[in-house]
Length: 352
Image 1 (spheres, rainbow, N blue to C red):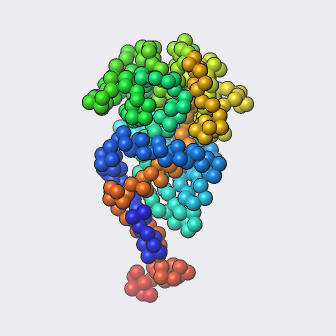
Image 2 (image 1 turned 90 degrees about the vertical axis):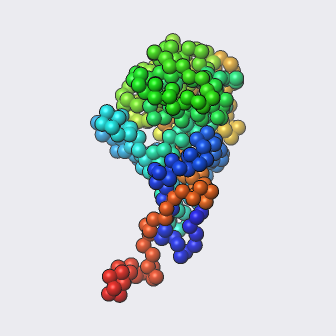
Image 3 (image 1 turned 30 degrees about the horizontal axis):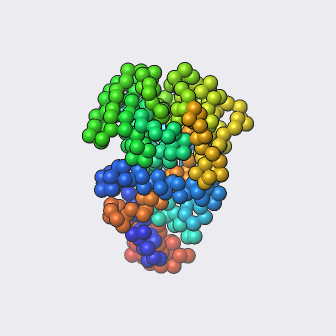
């Protein structure tokens, strides 16, 4: 860490939005996606060491605000994140976030960071980590349905980590598709702008759904998904919000992050509470199979989980010395005598 020792623990490294953009550009988007993916895999292999709980959510008619905490007993992390689909109509982000990494031994924070950009990176990295054991061998084409803020990150993660070379894009807002195609131009991948979801899935071995509407929706119907397809369903993230027709779920092998949370927020909220699912960490650890046949339909029902944010914050912490892109915030009161907090205030006024 760039800040060490008892004398400087009042100073907490802070990564602003400007800092984060600089870090991404210094390291490179694709390299950063690969780096975060590596940290996620490391932490999923330590899954049983972590404190785990469904995120703490405050729902409203227009969105949700959530806290996502976890700890491995050495470090503690939490993320504050919102999801407000209406925000884009008001010129605001659908998702914003910030996060904290702390030392369990002292309880002191060691990093404060923006996480709107970092969450976009970790979400895409997580999708690619899941797809490696679940997608069909030799896959080279992916459909992305929903071309908002997450779409480009998904494309670049799958290009970097799975070698996907062609992306078929569709959004109900054609301007979003044009934006996505424009941002991916010159990245060494083929782009097809499609006029419908049905057109987008044609010839795609991987289908990503990443829409924002906070409602039960049917982005994919059963007839749109052929044998052997991997579905990366990441748009569902709260009760009452889904993207897939129930019939697709019934003929898919379903993989999830943390079942108690996914059953509340994911696609499987449409199914019986005891419908069988496989935890992804077990696949990564070799304790459960991933894809087992060419004709198998696999579904990663992703809602995002706190351990992924923990991994992203760990990765970010380890890049600060390398990039130097942070500032130290005087966040923690540091009296000469830990028992004399009031005296510190008086001395600051010249009365102590």
